[in-house]
Picture: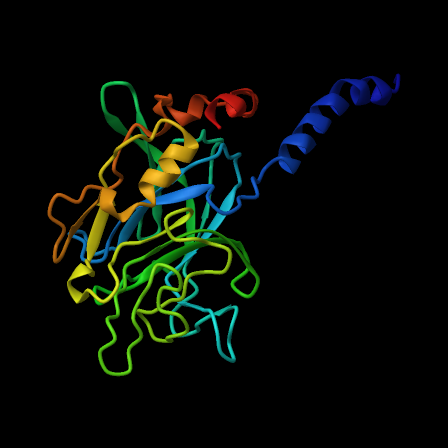
Length: 283
């Protein structure tokens, strides 16, 4: 029988190379500001805490983001590390190529996406896998910190802080610059290294104001969110957030805003090449 291996090799080698290239491109290594948190509920109706975030850069399938409610210690003997008083948290892995402007919603260990079709927000199907232990946000204050890498050597992407101290007793005074500094308990956190409040992170509270700590909050979709820079600025501005205590009132996640004005089509139709070609337009 004639040996057809050389012919088969010529036929299938290009296919194998394409598959290898796609695998190499599988994960987008996100940096500070590549996502922004858009809401959280610490007193949910469903019984599972939830939060949402919007992508501010295009990502490819297999992109990984870790989320934890552990506090970050800024100073002292444990400086530059996470507190170990809570579970590590969850890891989200995308199941599609997603364009900038896509909003992801995580409840417990389930992720879905929302997209805008020009007439309103639609809720899509699965937005990937969520592994680990679901976050349990404390109504007395907490945070969600997004990072890649490991819990021991994190690279921070964004963070949202919901805790407020006001200097009572031994408590520090929470600030935009340092959050809770090195105060170590299950509600406290310092501002993660390399992030800046109002730029690529947000603190919902106000210094020395015990009444500015809220169980739930969400971005109100304004003012200008048509570009990445504008969206990042608007979302990380606490003045643009609606807040509530107790079982959420008028808190709907995901927010369903038309982020970046791109009217994203259902993400299952987005190809990797489309993401690359649209990159300059979106960013």
